Image (cartoon, rainbow, N blue to C red; front, side, top):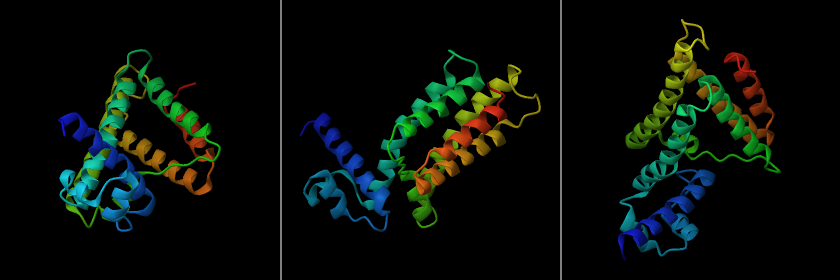
Length: 198
């Protein structure tokens, strides 16, 4: 098997297996469920992953590296002022969920962190690293907004980024429970007020 084919097969297992693990949880998902979802023999799993924990670590990287890259790209674009970039990014996410007939959100990182952050140090560290990168990206954009006079000069941009990130995660959870985008609409309206974007 050439390298490209090997990577494609690994990516297929990661994509399908992560979907199963998000819905069933880490402890509720065995290697058998992962390989069945990917349509491969059980023995093939161990050609790509040393263990279920190794699978979870690689799945975090597979899913969140491109998401972080998109977030950085959106928040560093020079097409609009910093605060508008932030609001625009979340407005697009709201539009995405609004197009769904019954809004659904399955969060792999949320599911893993709830179950495994304390039980598996490697998973806990990887989750924290991803969340820290996200906050750092947002804080950098907020700092640019502060320097350009969009925010008060004494704004603690890192604390504000933490607050926005946590508020968004909470809004997603409420959307998932209520199957309604109303919590996201409230989040966006308050974000616009907070960042003084009209």
